Image (cartoon, rainbow, N blue to C red):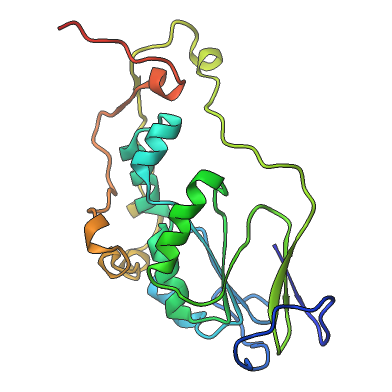
Amino acid sequence: MRLETSARPRRPPFPPKASPPAPNFAPDCRRSTRPGRASGGGSRPDELTAKYAKGADVFVTELELDTGRLIELKYGLPSWLYNYTIDTHHTPHYATGYLINEVNPRVGMVTHFPFEEDLVGEAIAGIREHWKGLFLWGAPDGVVVNVTKDAVWSRKAAIPESTGQNPPPFAQMLGEPLPDAFPVPQPRIPREEQQEQYTRDNEIDPRKYLPEDVYRDPLIKLDDPMTLDIKAMAGGAKKKKDK
């Protein structure tokens, strides 16, 4: 994604609903020198990002879908492992909308996102739970955003069609026949040892952005031991148990 500012648009943009203020050139939460942009990065949603990015022209943050069951059905990756990854290191789609709304930019934008057509609808639904303003996708790669004092608009580069994610070549990695279960290694350095408590204390409470009917307790610690069903992830049929 590239941000451009200019006195005159390169092509006529959609007119804004109201006359916006001049581009905000204040430093963003990442101390970027790019005028008017604040980026949240790939991390858990936190109060400091909302504070320091407040009022930016373009607020860019990440989005990871909190759809563990759908991912399990699509790729075979266990929902508990997917949820653990999201709950310890990423911003779920409801939190993305909440965070954009807290910043209240001229336009909210998402990057670092698995842009898959069958899941985009879920992403938009989560964002619109909180943010009703102008929104742009910063994915796939090659998106350019133009910012003037009168309008904000985006353009896309011409790139080849995107592809979906492919499961790892388990047969090459583990040999055949594939084992029924594969042990999941525990993190050698847990998150709690990698960052100070202050960082986690500033995470936004999930109850603030998750609707009541989809709320679940965050999964931030794995049971030991844990195993993966490699055959399910590889797309093979599960071995039927003897009755």
